[in-house]
Amino acid sequence: MWRPRAESTVKIRDTPSSPFSFSTFKDIQNLCIEDHPSSPIKKSSSIFHRVRLATTFLRSLSLSLSEPEHNATPAPLQEQPLITIPGADKRIVVYYTSLRVVRSTFEDCKTVQSILRGFRVLIDERDLSMDSSLLNELNQIFSGGGNCSRKLTLPRVFIGGRYMGGAEEIRQLNESGELKKFIEGLPVVDSGVCDVCGGYRFILCGQCSGSHKLYIEKAGFKSCTACNENGLIRCPSCAV
Image 1 (cartoon, rainbow, N blue to C red):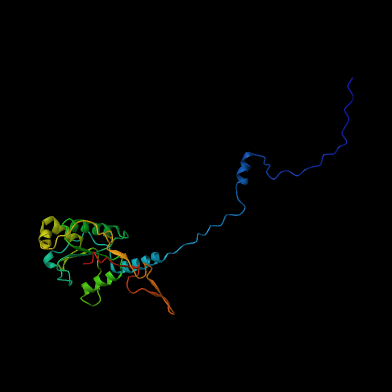
Image 2: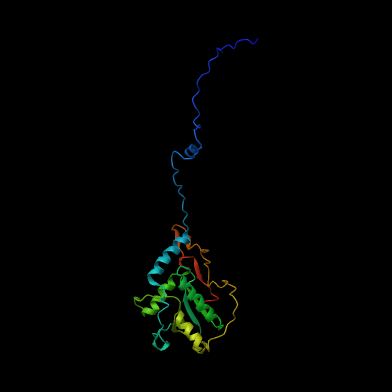
């Protein structure tokens, strides 16, 4: 015969239920919810000297340059204003920009440069994005020394010192063959890249090493007067 079962004298204490217990699997979603939403992490912005200068230049450039109207019909060459620049009788002068801020303007500048470089003549390319003083120079040319009230678009082309127009005018002259007649007589140059600047038309200033700052004893740091705001000077080999 089996002995009768005796009741145990050990008492089992009631333990609190685990905080992770759940009656159904649907409560798992509640465990994944954070009590406090994470605050956004603020990234410290780093500001560079040349980026600030470029931003300032772009603001001033946007006030003077507007996006060209491609649907507008360009005026014939005879109706173009007679504007000349001194010291450019034997070369082509092109005011343009290498920035891609306005896509249509950038493409017009690249198209005009490609057309003119095909003639292998001396071209003085003046990039307004590399030197802001060229914008003031261009305004002075079209204003005759006063304040220019008209909005200028890029590029602007001068052949033999005479103003020829913008992108549309150069395209039409090239398609009709008239552009070749205006370029005839200009000195022919090699189509290679400049060994000094590599084709950028600017080099670092030798006095400040491109920092646009000079340290003067008992006076501290001063702005370099030999270069522009970007610490660059015109290439002596290209700016003939």
